[in-house]
Length: 88
Image (cartoon, rainbow, N blue to C red; front, side):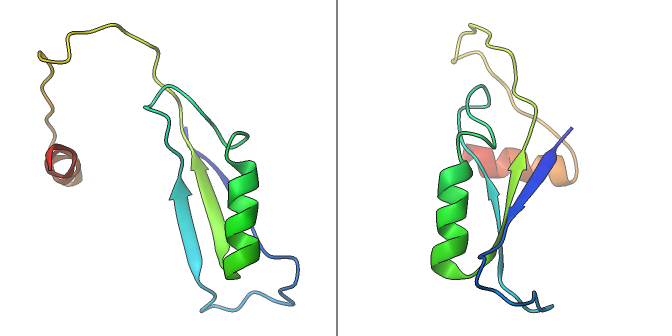
């Protein structure tokens, strides 16, 4: 289940329909980091750009020790697109 947290620059009087928005998905190799570890940088992005910044948190996978040379990736529809993008 994804959790969203948004940051808005405090100087903005009102949010308009056309206010630029950055949707940011943190890194961490699918096993590390969270909204908490990226809170400061999200606030900086909002303060310096005037964008609405939406940080997306997601469930982290458990750590498994697997052979990186024996991994396949597959999917269909939008998932297939993500698979291709992953392999580029």
